[in-house]
Image 1: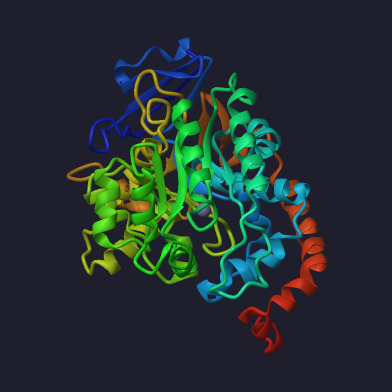
Image 2: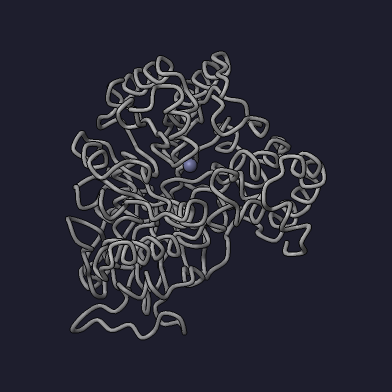
Length: 476
Ligand SMILES: [Zn+2]
């Protein structure tokens, strides 16, 4: 046995609940979990190469950050507090258009290390040329990644278009992105930590026949199709202008035959309740980004509804400009608290529901639940140890209830994650990265961000978002 983690409270996520085991142990051999259960019945610690004492903590599956664009972390703070209609085309877009490949890598490295520090061991990364990020960021760090290649046919800079003007489509750009997505399957076929997938960006950004082609490619490779679905006013206007006033994103997707178990529908806040139910009933899974959608749109994503409909639901941190962070415990808490507010019901999304969303729910939604999201024999040795004896998380009581369950969601800051392992290899020990230098990563990101903002400054001003006024008024 390579690794034995012993002595904590286990949350295995096996079955339909949390699978709580007091004084448990987890053993990992050759990257796979080979023992889960009571510490007293565990293999002899002297037979393990490495023993981790988790007394005073919770041992649980590594968190699944189910939807993130980590490259944009370089622009953290650059597109907050603007109207949704301006956010992409007039605030973020004029900045991100100036990011070069090294900027995107530096931003991703910052975001991925942030999310790992907060307990994530799997990230679903959605990016242009995502293979570069896998090679430059994920593989060196040893983090699980679902690599989604963004496929769209629209120019990055759309700041000169009026809100009702149709985006121009460039078919060649879309075809090239599709080829890049296809190539991921070959390029990473020998790395079990990389799961490629297809990311047609949104229905307003791809033509219908390209979307059908992408779906065919996904099915041929038994891969998922990640689609930002019904993500607000910007998209709804484009769908109306292109397909007719009676059409919506979901109605067009339905007509095209896109809604099925291959579809991973991201956001979905612009869909009606009956459309959401139809998506769930037809087998689509759903990913929500509560911090992001709250910050950008002032809307609570329907994660609790999709969960009630029986869909696989995960949560993710989206991109730092907007939500501001890549902390998965914070994201899970935001999901729970916002759902309670939206439904004026303190039980709309519970701590245990949010914990499942942040682990096995995300894994199911991404189609990787055979590998990650639970602690059971045969799954990958992806697990974290979270201290529940800190100022922020104590007291941990195991009878008559386990107070760690709500405390993980409602009181952690993320800094309580002490140890983290992927396939039994340590990413974090005692809160420190084993094989990465966060100070150097922050320094490089800061230097690159300053240079990028310098280059983009003029375009950003010309785009004329409300942030320009805020700067001129001395607020920002
Ligand atoms: Zn997204």
